[in-house]
Length: 223
Image (cartoon, rainbow, N blue to C red; front, side):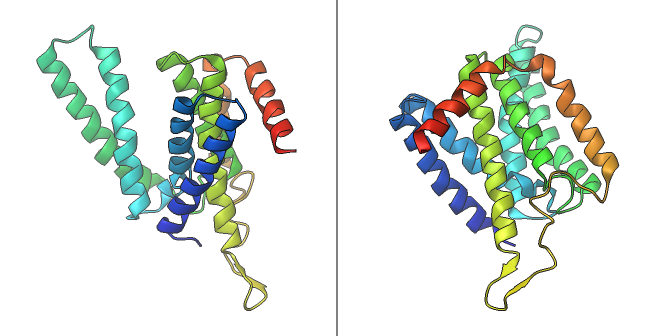
C-alpha cells in the first residue's frame, strides 16, 4: 500500500489542481478554493485513521481536535465564564486527541469499514452538515467542502488499490480489493451502522439541488 508521504503528497497535488481549476472555471472564489485544497489533502490521509500507531492517526486526531474546540467554544461561550470556558476547551482538545484516538484504535480494524466508499460518503456528508449548520456557510459552499473531503478520501482508496498491483511481477497483491470497496463485506453490521448514521444526517444537510448544479457545472468544465 502507499505510505503516508505518498498519500499526503498526491492528495495535496491533486487538491491544488482541483482548487485552481475550480477557481478558473468560476465554481468558487480564490479564497474559497484554499479550504478545498486543505480538505482534499486532509481527506487523502483520513482513511488511515484506523491504522494503529501510524503518523496518519496522530495527525488526524490533532487536526480533528481543533474544530472540536472551536465548536465547543461556540456552543459553550454563552453558558460559561471565560475561566471555565478555557478549562472546558482544554478538556475537549485532550478528549478528542487522546481519548478519541484510543477508542478509535480499540474498535476499528485497518482496511475495514473506514476503507470504503460508504465511509467516504459519511465523511463528506458530515463535513457538509457541519459547514451548513455549525459554520452557517451557504448551501453551495457547504456542498463544495463536503465533496472536497470525500474526493480526497477516494483518492486515498484509489492509491491503495494501485499499490496493490505488482506490475513488475504481473500479479495482484493480497491487499487488492480491500480499499476501494462499497462497504465492509466482512462485517456487515458495521456497514449497516454507518449507513444508519448517514441517513440520520439527512435533516442537517442543505438542499441537494446546489450539489446537482455543481456536478453539472464541473462535468461541463472537464469535457
